[in-house]
Length: 190
Ligand SMILES: [Zn+2]
Image (cartoon, rainbow, N blue to C red; front, side, top):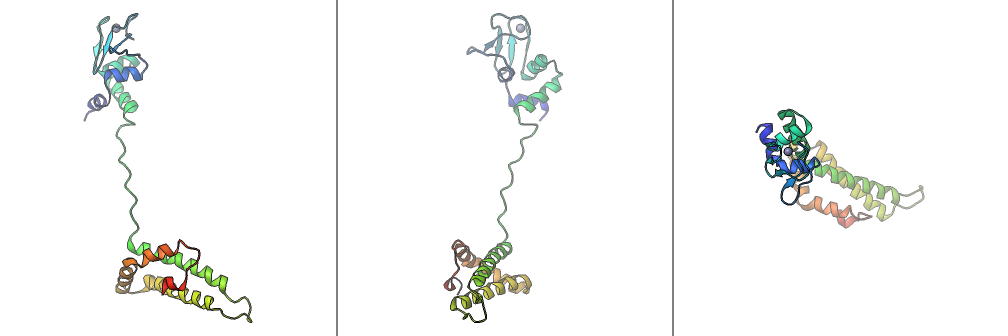
């Protein structure tokens, strides 16, 4: 498509004239800017024609004469003023969902962080404090999740593939729900 075709596909002479300040009445007539006009004698639609001075043409001709531009300059101006720049930018690609391995890492990491916090909060504070069942459970859950994460990082390709299949088969969905809550409990994991 040439710049002329592009400009003409974007805007009619009437739309260009109105955009640039002419008042076009309901009969499609306006005061001609190209001669000393006192009664609207320019007819505008797809093209324009003045019955007073004889000026005639399309949106590009109008714009060129109105702004004292060459035809290519006028076409370019129309494309810029009516086309949001030359070509409309392609709509941005939708964000890609994370690949399965990445999603597994992310969820396991969040679980690890949360369980580490729970472990710390329930840990005995002194040598004399008893080891509570709660703390023991937190340790077990933490070790389990760390084990999963470790296998995902350091396992063989087969082990990784098996684990990703296991996690994406509903386990991750479950973990994501669990992470919405304050505390992860034993039954969530085992
Ligand atoms: Zn005229």
